[in-house]
Amino acid sequence: TDGSAEIDRAEWISYFCTDREVVPKATKWDPDDPECQKVTGFIFDCDGTIYQPSGLIPGAEKTLTWLERSGLPFVLLSNMGAKPNAALHNKLTTPGGLFECRPNGKPLAEGRCYTAADAQVDFMTSGSVPAGSKLLVLAPNDDWAQMICECDQPLFESWEILTDMDVDTAKEWSQHAKAWLEWETATLKGQTPTGMRPPKVAVVFFTDGLLASDWSFDLIHAVTILLNFGAEFIYTSEDETNPSIDWRFPNTNFPTPGPGMFVEMFKQSIPAHYINRCICSGKGGKMGRKFMMDRAIQMLKQQGHSGERDQIMIIGDRFNSDIRAGVLSGIKSCLLESGAHTLELKDEFPTDIPSYTAPSIAHIAPAHRVPRRKKHVPSHLFVLGKVASRTERSVGTQVQIDPEFGI
Image 1: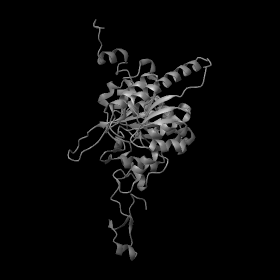
Image 2: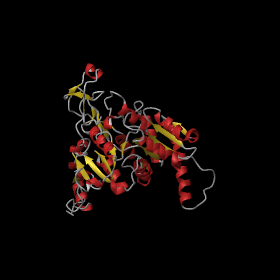
Image 3: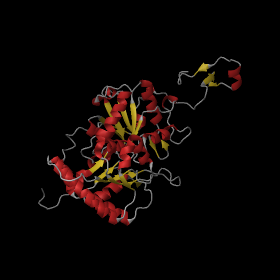
Image 4: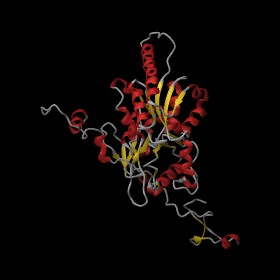
């Protein structure tokens, strides 16, 4: 519009994206507002929402306690890419652990957790990666293999799987990738391909950013070749970084590489006409609606929710995963400013518009309905406002019941 042959990001957003003044803006979450009270099913992100590297985020246990006492279903979703839901559940229920969360004074119930690794296993065993496929799997451990075997061991055993690769092998596999694409294209056109079906080739990430070992240049070269020839790129999440702390530097977050950092690097090697072969099953990903969000809604229904999407809200701290997942799934969303993103970044994500915002998870529950938990006392028995001594309890002294615990 200014006569130059160049356009910067601000001009692009201004020209192609509707002005923010006429786009629905995020409303401040108010649990006492009648509109907010229409939300009866809650999906929570974990890192940056429920917990941070130093432990639970203040208010997380209080909010989950409110949901438990109110009978409102909730699910915890993590873009954890290397571990199953059992690992997330164990993290939150280990007695005395840094991340122990006891909603309503009890361990977190089974069936409330789900991870991006779970979603990716479901995707891979749904028929999307057929028997006989050739897979280069990059992961920090072997948890992914156990997860797939528990789901479909015969399918797993039919695959040819490598966890490292040299350039010569990549060149060989690239010809299988090319042949698969030709066979697939002919099939989609209704033609009958000649000869046997070639093996599908895929590069698969099961990682949160951690690597099993330092990647060699040969491995990076090998992945580049495979993706350039049309191998499918399957990964759990596009989260660019993960938080970490160093106790020597209080109140400071040091980012560590997330899976999205490596995903973006390898995407640079993919020709534009193959970019649709990138498959992400985590929150905000291409297949995340079906394999993560629909699963979360099903988990809510198993707890008694109707499944009506206008009564469900996802709560998280990232525009490009949590909020995008809500938008793509047709449910409400709430951006918490306690983690990776704040509302100030909204113009960087012009299509990921949250329904609500809140400073942190502590602001989700009505403060007047969830009393502050006192220090845990095993018996919860009190005498004239003080904890009953062992002697007083043993001789049957009249006690005062603590109303906060209801016992």
